[in-house]
Figure 1 (spheres, rainbow, N blue to C red):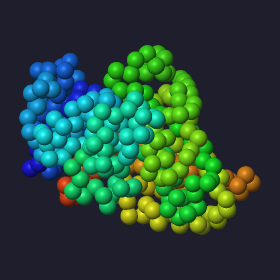
Figure 2: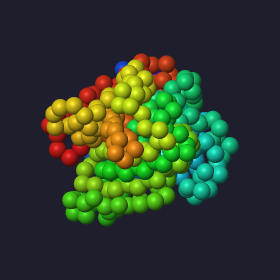
Figure 3: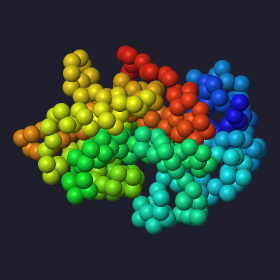
Figure 4: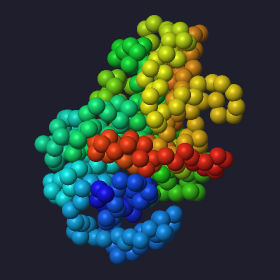
Length: 344
């Protein structure tokens, strides 16, 4: 068995990471940290994990392991990266601290970087984008949930040459309250969140940097907070120089995703859920992608939907770790979601 610990296990993402590791056939869960809940059982914070015989420990009680999953707020991992890399052969960071390839990008989009010498070692976690570089990686950076949903929706168009850096792209993302984390504050509280479709990042969202870095696109990007708990749904309006035929769009999406275990193509058809829908993937590591062709306006509308806590965070991190360590890619990630469910 491969030993694994979780730093910051009391948050929403940390809880998902613990849930996934506890059911993984190759990992043995060793420790999880929490400053606030040290010595308390994991189940006292995450009631779905009451059957897990594990207590939180203080961060300074961490012991060496094979793999360390770090689920802390942005800025923490970069402060402790040398300590974490000394403790584990492989570090998987779920914050934004190593997602971007260059220190200058952190100066522009975040508040700088205190450990830029480690950026060159980090591999972006999304396997659908970076699988060939993940094998054997010892520092893995999980992508942002809104960047992940957008990248998955647009990647087939980039791969096929339908979408180029010169084309206009407008992206509108709807995201659930869990994106704000367990300490999300008033904006994420139920009375304030209920019933809203609230623009909270009309321009200059930080996840734009990932899209630019890994797809080579500059996008006009807006994010709305909506009344759901889990989910990130991206609607991407693409204005290509030449409008492709419908069959070429089908070919592009199938070429990119036909062999991907966690991506399914949902584009029209029958039934209630005719296009990608966060509710349909809640709790799973699956992503749904799709498209519609608007010939009248020379526009392609690309859709994608993920569970922001899974494909947009903990599930993506575990998928990347599976690839890095040579495990079966789908190990520990075979939950297919539920239907019907309430707020995803």
